[in-house]
Structures are given as structure tokens and as C-alpha cells.
Length: 93
Image 1 (cartoon, one colour):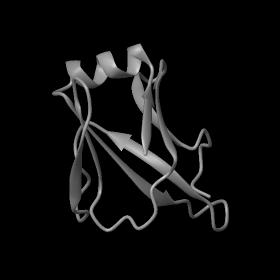
Image 2 (tube, one colour):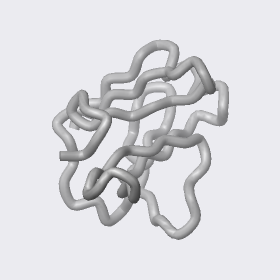
Image 3 (cartoon, one colour):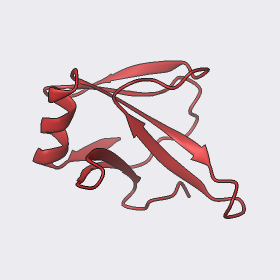
């Protein structure tokens, strides 16, 4: 898996503790669409495994079977947060 992080996203990750947690989340309102969530704190009830990165620690769910070819991390301005994209998409295919 290749991680592509914008400089702004990497800067926010480092400024908020140096860790980012990314996990799939099934949306209830849109049928069977699975989107990615990202946070500087882990959600309750999910075990994570660290993946080494330059300057920060990326954590993915321990039970995640299939990894993307690329995981993109971008900064969203309003509200200011990191968003993750699986192979360039906002949803997991």
C-alpha cells in the first residue's frame, strides 16, 4: 500500500499528536456504501495496527482484509480535518 499525503494533511497529523486512524464506515443513508473515516483518536470498539510512515504513524483496523493500492490523505478546511480516500475514491470499492 502506498500512502499519498498532502503536506497540509501531514502537518495537521503531526500537530495533533503524530497519529492518524483510518477505518471503513458503512453509511446507513446511502444503501451499501462504505466510506472511510479518519481521526487523530481511535474510535471505540475497533482494534488497530500501526503502519510506519515518515513523520507520523498511520493506523488501520487490525482485521482489515484488503488494503488499497493507494491511501490518500488530504486536508479539509471546514471543518479542519484529515480525510482519507481509498485508491482516490471517497468510498471503499
